[in-house]
Length: 318
Image 1 (cartoon, rainbow, N blue to C red):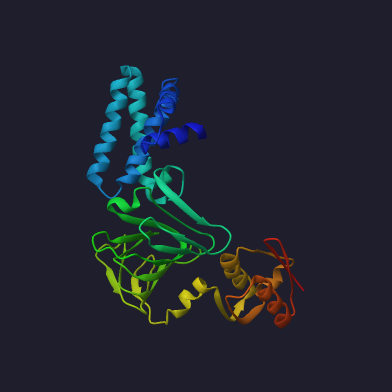
Image 2 (spheres, rainbow, N blue to C red):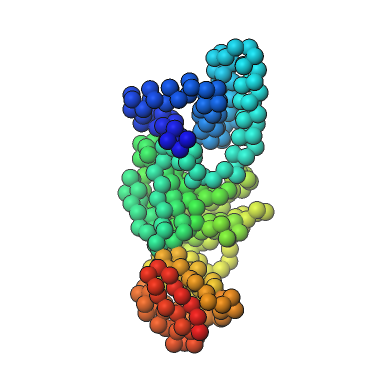
């Protein structure tokens, strides 16, 4: 099935070869089950692409219901229409909860993941993105043709190439950040409540997709957070939000579990605690673009720990 999913994806993005297209048609016509799966997948993809326009959603739904209706006998037709209608309803209900990085939602997109620490990546328009560990972005393959949209999961620092004609838009969870040319940080990790945006240079417009009428314009030094309830400007200094970009870390009485999570994201090493009580040890330390070996050495000396590096595993004991 995975192979035919890939073929469907290629057809949707006009990347399928003549031979592959013939093979996909053969598979679709082999059974009603295959045909229905294909129709539902195409419908789901169309809805995902057009979910911001309810009128277009309904037109897409009606089109595919009609295609199914025209291709079957009356008896089979009733069954398939019911299946398609149920699929439309269920797709619309769960669409917002669907993983933005599932195979269906990455058809026609380039995806970039930072699996082993901070990753620096240049977008087609020349904009530079520093992606923190356990984070990923996606953008359409025609990114620089008529729009500059990026989807973010996790945390990233953006240095956006100026282009007044093509605003640069980032979608993260239920938030949207729109800029013309600037540098700023976006934190949208799953373990963080809401989305936080901090501006280093330039100017950005920060808004919530849930509360479209609420927008905040952020200037250098500004920081704002969107939670489930509101969008608010933060009074705290946002300088620390940019530390990770330079591999700088500052810990003041922070749990060792939290410390190792940040180290993992920046350096791509995974903590392994020998006992659970070690996670609560309070750590006060600062590091500035130091090698992981030096960080481990300092943590051991100042906190009576025994941390050993074994490849990408950080074994923590006493």
